[in-house]
Image (cartoon, rainbow over all chains, first blue to last red; front, side, top):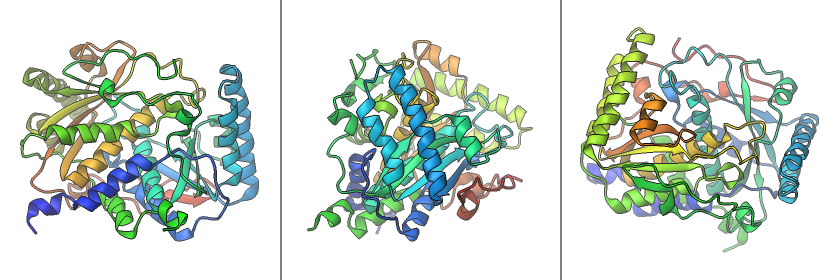
Length: 224
Length: 224
């Protein structure tokens, strides 16, 4: 095996990585079956191998195994769902309800947050302090892809009041929740993104998102 | 093949996804060989299949093929490198230099930015408007993993003045550059994260980043 073939994965391996990328879905329907503890450990470990700005590893994970806590999280999300539905004139009401229900139905709920005391990390963040969130998002994408490969669905819920989740989990004021992840077994994966199936928005042609040497033209809004 | 085996990838496919996650590195050394146009198209397409909040697809990509533009980007990053080195008392000077040099050496430079006119996208962003950046980060992680599988290195540079890059690429004021990606062929991938090899910080044990039903204890800083 030459050094060059070692660097490049085998064709089936490359295909597997692209398959995970293409077949990953933001899932809202779950069977309720529990997730194996070993699987959860692999998913968290995948997250922890994400890139992070200045190697600051800003991600923290809270596994919600207490049903009372899970119901309390659901209530926080339900409150925000109503506020968002009002702001959107109920346009998204039906599938937002599903997302909220997913918190009660899925095998595992994990709250992901930005760690406390991040301000001393300057490397790569002097002009872009929000790179800590970018790192956490990469970690969640790792979980998402690994879960898809393992046959588990994941939904990222960002419909919540930050202060309410901070208080519920007794988080330090400078730590910040950014995701409630619903993870679990599913009957089947959606063939296309659910928001596209529901007519909320369509995928923009890839070519319209990229341009050479200049900023691309503004696109019509995907939900126009 | 049962429905269940269809949902779950095959064992070799699962292993390939985890391999990409574990062997992905933030690369700073490149051979300078050009990247095949088809490969670049696959990478951008992988990015475009990332999740996005409310399916808003906020990512835009500018491929820098004009050498003058690339050198101008390099100069912007070099200026910020000096400012950061000063803020850090030169602690990171050596490997930051490598990062800057990568912009000149790599096969492809791609600027990734948040599209203009994002404020009308409310779904999933009413309380967390920064979810647009989270979506772009997921897109970049897709590129990163796909590139690793294809044997290409990637480095995410966030050492730049946002306004300077906006002006250079004539971006609308409400669009925002968040990454200068250096993509290209490499001699070899680092065995461990370069910042760990350089003694800048160590990987925190995974178990310390996760807790059940409560926020994890604050950790000693990884660079302490």
